[in-house]
Amino acid sequence: MGRVIAITNQKGGVGKTSSAINLAASLAILEKKTLIIDADPQANATSGIGINPKEVKHGLYECLVGDAAIKDSILSTETPHLDILPSHVDLVGAEIELINVPSRERIISKLIDGVRDIYDFILIDCSPSLGLITVNALAAADSVIIPVQAEYFALEGLGKLLNTIKIVQKRINADLQIEGILITMFDQRLRLANDVNQEVRKHFEELVFETIIHRNTRIGEAPSVGKPVILFDASSKGAQDYLNLAREILVKHGQISETVTS
Image 1: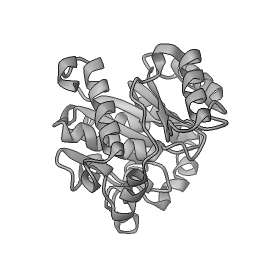
Image 2: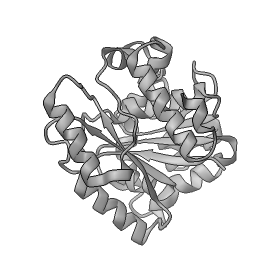
Image 3: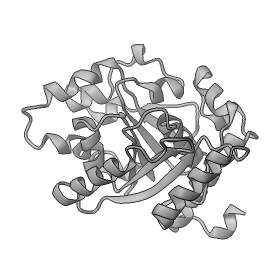
Image 4: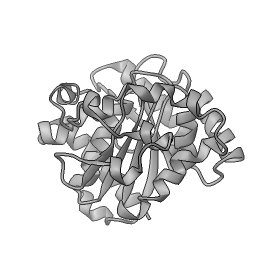
């Protein structure tokens, strides 16, 4: 059974989609069969992995409204062991179309049930909003990764998101866990970034990943050519950071030994 991880933060610009793409690719490079689900109408995960959203015939939207089966909508990518359930702009209307559907908050969960045995990991790139699609993702997930930018206002909205997760745990998905809070866009030269890192770790302790994603130009450049950073520049700091994150998660779940990470 594949582990389902939602990657979410209602605050934009925190590296959410970059983390979804690059963590998924890193898990795949480590030979874990991985699916990324693009649950954001902006479809940045789709384009960032090399697929033109305008050319997507069947994606998450069609699966949600019952026009396509998930197995027929999943596409392979340039990265070995990595597939994607893509998105396109029509997804923005899905919440209205699903408003009267019974158990509408569990549709993604039911979709995933059809492919969960095929994958080791299923990552969901959520929209920055806390609408029905994001609630669906949280209902389907085993755990949540929360990217937090190492800049001023980093904690803004984090408390609200954690409260939302508690509500989902109470009402929809009692087994939902926090996989970890991920410090992103970290520049060790800046005092503010170091202060934010310390503050987040002080408040949330073991919930924070040991791995930090440093600010790296290659992470920002890679989506422009439709590649994860590990395919764009495997030697870059950004690629190595996401590989370390993947290894940290695999160690946590007993899928590799800790000695392999060194």
